[in-house]
Length: 494
Image 1 (spheres, one colour):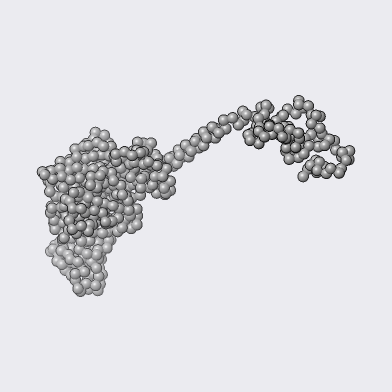
Image 2 (tube, one colour):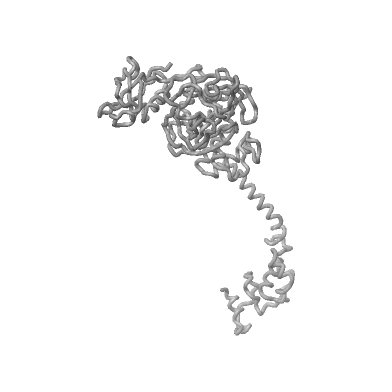
């Protein structure tokens, strides 16, 4: 406490006892005025900041403390006629508007900085993976400004996002991939159906399932119309069909470059990775569902046209309205996902969290006796994108696709009571074929092919066909109680 404050609070000291000359009023608003100083001793012109003097007098308990000015001073900032005063009205007039304008500018600067950090829409989606939901919301915000995302309730020709700030990673992935997703309507002689497709080139090439363009194998010269996500319809032309992989390529000519899907690496997937499926179940275009990778290196048999019979058809194509394949079966290597896939999703995209293509949806497992009424039970299957794109590129280049041939007939080791391991048992070997040349004999049990595990004959058949004819690869088999790994050069399946 200052000496002045100590003196003023000790009433027993005489006024003359202090040798210190009277000092001006303290700037401390809590200090009382000196007894030797009378308000009348100070002329109005002696101290220019009158507002400061009034504030000090009010705090000192002078006769002005009960005035209306004192009450007003408690309710609003004091006004001052002194232009240099921090309380002058010119100092605080419009501060709220300035603060709000500053906050808005800072928000825009933060958004611009984040956009520059992500760089592009693809980078935004990647950033949403690294940054969580916030990044996803930002990706959708950017796409909204580009016109790819429509706020509010509209026809599902685009991704509808009502609350951009609350948009999820799934919304960002869907917005990223949606311009590359199409719906196919196929008509023939008394038959018809719909399916999905994915744009893979700016020139208008679309990858889909063979059973979509052939309506389950019942049509050889279908009429195809393709609906893009902007609501336009285009005639489609079949470039090539490969029944063994159930892949087909259709082309449309829009007169302008299209947006091809970003490609992922299906060989780099892990069980548990998030997945997003987009397609047209039951003709409902641009339907988005999500799940995880439930299993990898799975193999299934499905009905297909113009194929050798690989065994019983245990799984349903997701064809709409109860349609089903009409000829034979084919073994396919697939990614298993619990993302909801329903009739009409065939040929649609399975995506990773970067919005990249990792699979072409092909089939579902169903507990229905017939395809009529079949729907998702959480067991959906997609052709790995690496395999699908190899076939699609070969169809675009030459109209044909290549598949390997081992030159052996196989059964399940589980049916052999003498087998000690799971795998594909060699039943017979074609003389001079690839298996024969590699030294494989009847009774051997194949347990690995091309580095992947083989648990039954469907696995081996499917994996052999993913490799082009003429490829040299590895094969592991068990003979007796010994395991052997050999190199085998596959023949061409014609």
